[in-house]
Image 1 (tube, rainbow, N blue to C red):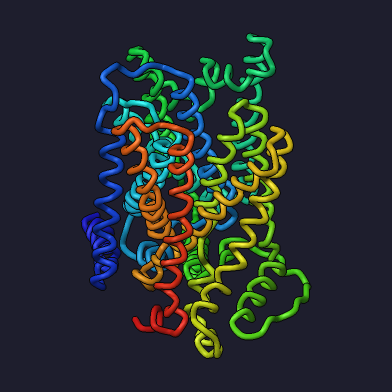
Image 2: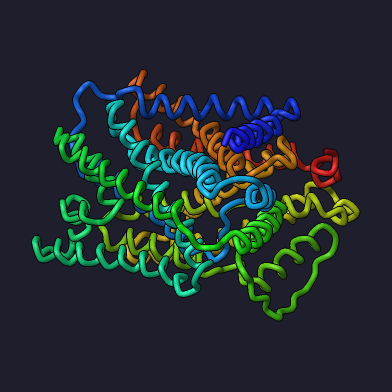
Amino acid sequence: MKTLLRLWFLKSKANIRNLFKKPTSAIFTVCMVLLYGFIIISMFTIKRSPSPMMVTLDLHTSILVLIGFLALMLFSTLMSSKKALFYGNDAFFLFSGPFTRKQIMAYLTLQTIVQSVMIGFFALIFFVGMSSGLSFEPMFVWLLIIGVIFTILIFLVLSDYLYVLSIGDKKYNILSKVIIGIFVFIVMMTLIMTYLQTGELKTLFIDFIQSPLFYFVPVFGWLKLGLISYVTKEYLFVFIGFALLLLTYIIIYLLFINYQGDFYEQALQDSLDFSKRYKSLKEGNQNAMKDVKVKNVTGKFQSGAFAVMSKNFLLMKKTGHILSANDLITISIYIVLAIFTGLGFGFFIYMMVLYIFTSLQNSELATELKNYQIYLIPDKPIKKLIAVMLPTFIKVILIMTISLIIVGIYYQTDFITLIMYLINMIGYICVFMSGSVLTVRILKSRSSRIFENLMRMFIMVVCSLPSVFLTAFVLITGHLNTATLTLISYSSLFMNFVIAVGIIILCQDMMNGRELKSE
């Protein structure tokens, strides 16, 4: 086991060392760690109110939205058709080496714990955004962190267990769908029972998120039970909630490590295939992790730099990426939540910002930087960079426009207001895409989705500084009026466009072959 622990340690060390390979990426990494460490510490360990925590509708809503965020990620993991226990190199070393099954599973557990912590980190950032204005006690924060990590661990280990079961017998492939169906059925039954208790359809969602019936939802309900019970000082139920999470994890883990079926050969093949797909994903192939049906379509090609844009549009049409089923399902969920839960238009706008944040993976940029032909196009670098970014930019704007029109019609929002919301969304799109560009410029081939997301959040924080300073000035001087409020609202929007344009101009030389190919 010492050999495997050393392997895990050396791999982790190598990944960190790779980030410090160049001075620019080292400085960037340190700044990101310090910045987000400060955000987590300030948000979760500094109590923002002298009064004790209280159970409010805002707290219920924040916890439930966090649970929804976790459910979407974890259920998508369960439903994924491309699974593997390890990457190809690890699988070959482990399955052919002198290691027992439990040693291999213990090594896998280390990887799963690290993965759970990383996913939990983004879930906590999400929770911070949803719980603005609430104050937290340090103990509540620790319970939240522990509960989120155990929730993620349960589903990741369950996914691995179902995977090895399906290798032994294909009939187990349906189990993931059955489990998700059971969760949906329990939630629906809970909604029905809540309605029978209250008799109010308009406030059904509000009643549902505050009802003790939600605690009967496996895993997610137990997490909420533990957190809410701590606030209400019912420590027995805190223990029950977290004990159920721990017990569930232990049971699934024991089933997994004691599985006696023969899965090594197929698991090795799947690991090698997964590694190839993951490498392709990092190089920019968005469809690497799924089997894509290519359509027979045609299109016109522009001249010069915009031939790149034409090519990317054609590829998006052939793979159905312009308006995918996942996009439609995600937006439909947000619209349903906004309309039928009473959370309102503001909630929908907030969810749209999150959608933009998570959907703008700048894969086309990384792909084109590794394609030497783009450097041979006799055109200006900035035009090439814009041509690479435009397909994704236009796709997201199209989805934003359709979504805003649907929700705007329901809430009878006037045309001018919708236009202003759309301009705000375009500002966020520019900031998030420029964050990806700057990450590639700094980290080059070491760029990853994690660092792209960190850079986007960092730039968004920088863009918000003018409005923060203006707000502080207004509070200090007492000059609070309509004009100052309008100025505060538009200052961040203005900075979004200024910083995004500045980054694109700064990074335009990437299209001359001076970035990834220089390593």
